[in-house]
Image (cartoon, rainbow, N blue to C red):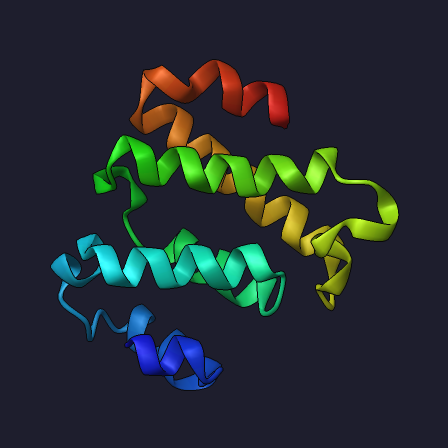
Length: 121
């Protein structure tokens, strides 16, 4: 799984997620979550990682991990134009829509973050 994410095997990973080929517990593992957040923070494969996050159940993540995800998405809003990693995405509008979808999922799952998520949107 991590190898597929790291090496950009998007076709395999997308189909495997849709078929539920991976155990749900895999996405609770610290190493997998860190890898997903690291790639998202770098700004590469943004749409792909946001799609992966929308297909998995992030509501089981720890508060610290959800906070990191919210901060990454918030950086898309706060960063200046010339430093915004969202511009590395091949389709920034799709990235924005996927990010909003994730913020909604987080807000619904954890009332602790609902205000912050709605402010970012």
